[in-house]
Length: 116
Image 1: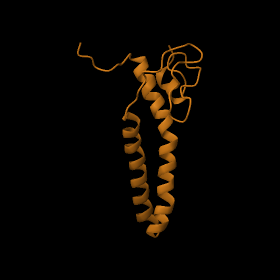
Image 2: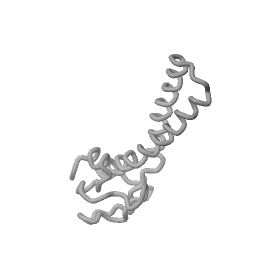
Image 3: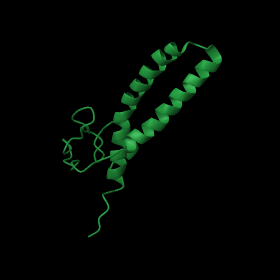
Image 4: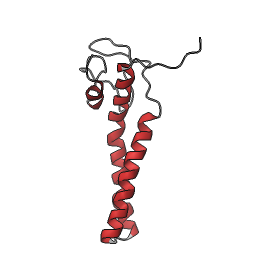
C-alpha cells in the first residue's frame, strides 16, 4: 500500500502507486494495469468540485478585490484576466483532487452505506 495522498497527487493507482488511474481526463480505469486492483467502484462524487469551488473562488475573489483596491483597473480588464485564470485553475486542480479523494477512499476502505 502506498501513500494515498502522494499516489492521488500523481494520479496513480491508489494500491500500487505505479499505473495511471485515469484512462481519459476524468474517466477512472476499471482496473489497475499493473497490480489488477478493482477501480470500477471508485467514485469521488461531488467532493473534488466542492473543494475546488472553495479554493478557486477564494483565490479569484481575493485576487480581484486586491487588484481593484491596489490598481483600480477597468472591470473588463478584471474579467479578461480573472475569469480565464479561474477556469484554467479549476481544470488544473480537478484531476488531482479527484485522484486524491479516490485514493483516500481506497486507503480507508470506504464504501457506500448498506442497510442489509
